[in-house]
Length: 257
Image 1 (cartoon, rainbow, N blue to C red):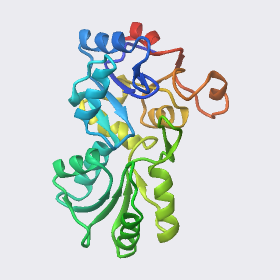
Image 2 (cartoon, helix red, strand yellow; image 1 turned 135 degrees about the vertical axis):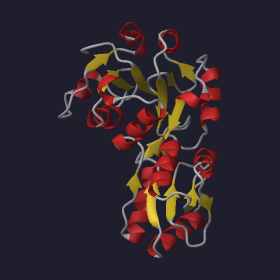
Image 3 (cartoon, rainbow, N blue to C red; image 1 turned 90 degrees about the horizontal axis):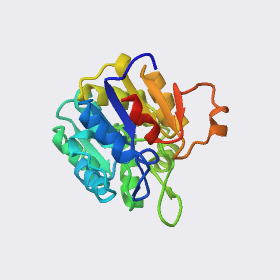
Image 4 (cartoon, one colour; image 1 turned 45 degrees about the horizontal axis):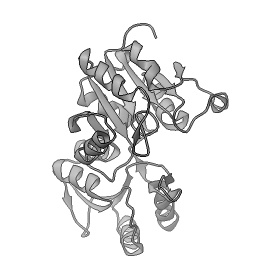
């Protein structure tokens, strides 16, 4: 790392928390960012929850992160749509994180001739809603999805996620969605705009090579991979790209701030 980064983006699950527990060094890392007055955002591809919900979840794990310092794929999607078609309309399959973000971006939610069909994460996918989405897309609505993750975690095991349902809709319509969340570097660029950061002095910390690290590289950021999530040291060698640093955990990043 050539110089001390001025701005930080960090993934949430696998970096700061695992399930409902803070990972070692996470509290110290966040406190150092505050002490050094470094602009930062905590990123997540999960579109179910609002930043307020996620701030409360982190607080229960002992981590203090203000809601304005949390950037979700739902917020990135709403920002993207607000730029593409201000004041547009959307048929949404998703939960409060997505519907709230779209409302705040000035969007009208409707199932009558919407400009977009927007697919997000939900724990209660409805066949009726998916059928409605298919028919609206065939009728001319453009297809947007918050993130391409095909499964999500739960206490009982993996759950089908946005990418899996998007694949079903694509099969039925022949239309591929535009995914806004990671690994699309669009999510990082919208996050940097939020905190007025520049790529040359911003670092991304993540636990996944195929989302966090590749998107960070494509966005022109310094990248740090931590080994407390889904990627192991042995996994790194399988990819044709490399993170700037590989650290055992976020605890090892504190001294870099």
